[in-house]
Image (cartoon, rainbow, N blue to C red; front, side):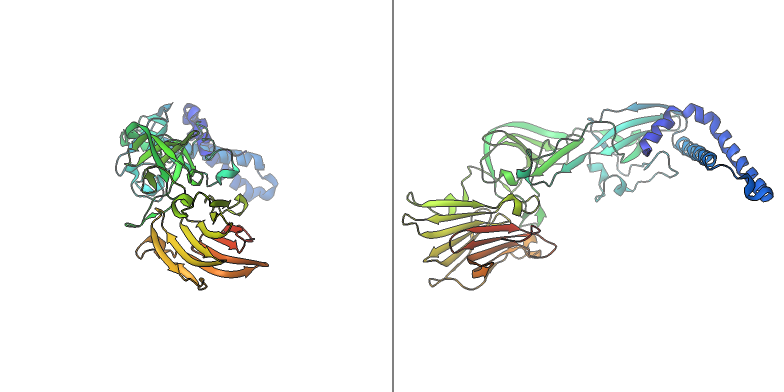
Length: 442
């Protein structure tokens, strides 16, 4: 049976008084036994070997004594252990001294990476106190950094966009043990207010701010991140193409502001307030860009879940037909949520228009006789998308697997270690869509 360090520590704590009295005796008896065993081995060789189970028991007793000794060196005589309220938020003092363990032989350290990986600013993170150990030498508190859990699970394959919140029990792994004077109680939420159903919509599901190349990943959370010990989130792809309403706003003690959103049916969770949220009425891409008349017909095709990659949203194709059933325009909503419009005349693409997330035209190429050459639209120089090679590429009149495609749109970075999407539309208007790492495209 495997015992965790926390379970061993609990056993040691309950039996500390007994071990304190017999610990030294056990250690000395063990040493005397080892010396006696060596003397006997010299005389009797292998005829008087100590049984393996007895030897294992002696080693366990010795190890227990050493762990008790390490605990006493850090705490002195243990007076009591108190379980803390994990919903009280703390910050650490700058350069706080801490131990990784109470049972191992170690000195205090201020190596900040041990408590909050990938950052050197532990004093900016929120921590919970798990247990407090009161000793005659000093008082230490077992702490754990507030966690964020991300599902990375396609929304349509699960009944809910986030998994159940982890159980609020006492079986937490410990980030470290700090002196009680190095903990400072703080408020997790700096400011909050209710909002009167202000309309918003998502203009992208994930992206980078073009001016400072700062990433703002869009996730929807079941609580404001940093406001409680465990917050769980998922992707926002299922929140695209719809009207959202902000009912509350909150700023955590790290300065990040979140909006609580709902749609027409229900509450959906908390989303970071950023450039990827647009305030105002949602208008569908087809209505914005296809300019359909009352007599026209728009037909939508959506990428199946089976060909989607990871947590990214489904690509879409809108085909516009006039009153004579002629196919005159095609709008592709790509893997990175960029709109691309094809003008079609007599079965040929005569114009292609590239738009950004805000439906602004960024590039247009026309040819009345029909486009045949490969066309590429690159991001603006200096942006992270440009650095990563993310762009859009359109080819015309291709053929594969016995099908003739009017156009093929690739979006993202077609590198084996990156992600990208492909939309192929046949000469009859049928769309085949896939994302990376999903197998055959047809």
